Image (cartoon, rainbow over all chains, first blue to last red; front, side):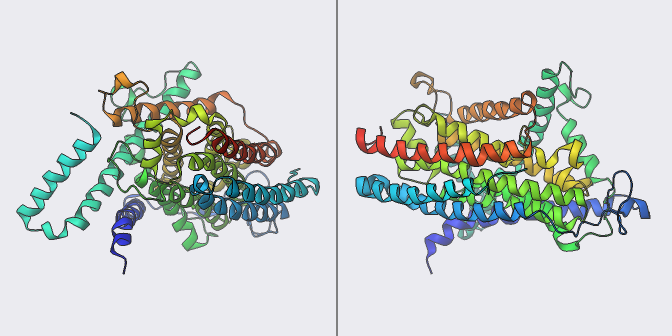
Length: 125
Length: 352
């Protein structure tokens, strides 16, 4: 086992546990302290104006495919960004060779981005 | 001399004596981080409450109002009163909710943003854990807020919450890319992801805002969008979507989302200060007698004030304008910035 690694992440884990414990405790506390006066209208989903559905406010519908598309575009770009990070750390050691190969990589990416734009994937109406 | 490093050292010496008295000195490797995490948590809790008060005061002055002034001096205790009030409010549980995600979402929203604070250096050596991949860690862990927002929107089973959640996720995800790209040129120049190392690099050269003004602009813009703050607060546009993804949340669960948003502002401003504005460094060498953590706090408050000023000066963008700005302006500019920086670093030699 790598001891240094555990020593490095121990404060993070502890901070995370603390940050998880406090909101949980507060939510439990408010469940204890708060009044309980339920009625049907209060517990139904918030709705505005005329009720248009059988189950008021029910939100299990199909949703716009745009959101899916944005998520796909994000995945492509985010993976590329993750690839950029180690390159950026070693950039000055690799000098021109690293720069030129990254130029090629970003060129391919820019082409993909341009294609997305021309196909209308970035339009939002 | 009063400095962050000395304060940390004397406090830890005191603690180690205390452990020895109680006979726990064998566990100091575990106890020290526990203390550090608690100190950071306490600081953040108080600072968030101060910021909520500050935001209300700033907005009041911008609109020629007085703002909160009843509870405590200058209304400083207003947020404390609000927090207590929210805790003893009724916890409304909508009938159609999905139980588990509905409860977990506010906790994630709080944890994900708070976890980012752990690696921020307030002064030389004044940090809970100066990770060697600090910058990557912050970016990774703060993007967990998307999960909180999506699960809040979905589990509420309310069409406004669902739409707000989707819009919010689409926005955060779109602005994540320019945000991360704007940090790459800085890493190329410093060659390290450790936040302390980035500040040390700036102590030998100039602050990065002088070399990388475009990156600073992109970072602040995308960080504002990431935190779902105006002018990018479409997910919470009251006139269209009621409260957005937290429409169905009330009481202390709502407070968690609210606190999470403010901590997100603190984290992104702290990263902006550390990376672009020299962290704990004084602006001029002759001002070095002022301790570093005071400089850090001054800069942090100035950047937060800037973000607050954005909120009350710019009108809200439309969804298509928002997406266009992110994908068609910020991303290409950020990529060009990386290429230009790379060229300059190699052509003009190290450190520019």
